[in-house]
Image (cartoon, rainbow, N blue to C red; front, side, top):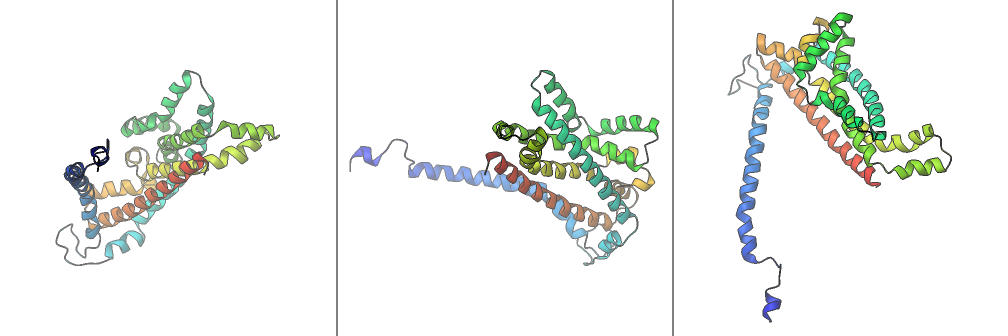
Length: 283
């Protein structure tokens, strides 16, 4: 066999493959260590929610569902969960409407000030939430909207709108403009073009933004501490109060429910993002 045939240029040798294997092992070991570091505290909470005792201790004295009965059986926990769901759903609906309208406007602008306007719209994602909470309090207090559902919905809509603008604006920028032109050439009005061409294309992005917006509203505790009253106590705020007053396994039961809920939202987001990418590619 000729030496050129035996040692082809660019062909991987067995020595190179053996040299790469230790680096792959180190890479996967580091990834596993980081994953364990992130998930171990979360995994430690879940067994405590099934404890039959009244204290957060290991080893568990026994297994029981008493804390789930306390959380889901009524009282302050179920009321707080209802407040979180109500405020989150209404704030999500408002943020999807406002975020989609803002995205449509930003996508059509090419002036220099459009970048500044985009930065202003997305600023609630960058500004610390405590500043947004204080600003919302001073804005809502003169109108007597603190300690009301309306004030909570307005404040949560402010922090949720950017989570809708980002995916919807991206979907609009990836949308082929020739589709709208073809619809107009066929005699479609701008309204019909939007309803038949643009809206179906950005619908997965709107759904993905709605999930992000709901997660942002549902997870908020800082705004609720400043604006919510006794009747608007959300689930995160109730958990914060429980950490200060009395730490019982009921907190871990609530945390486990929120972990399951957040994981479900994350899986839905991943599914919607895949559909958005497929729609953008025209599959």
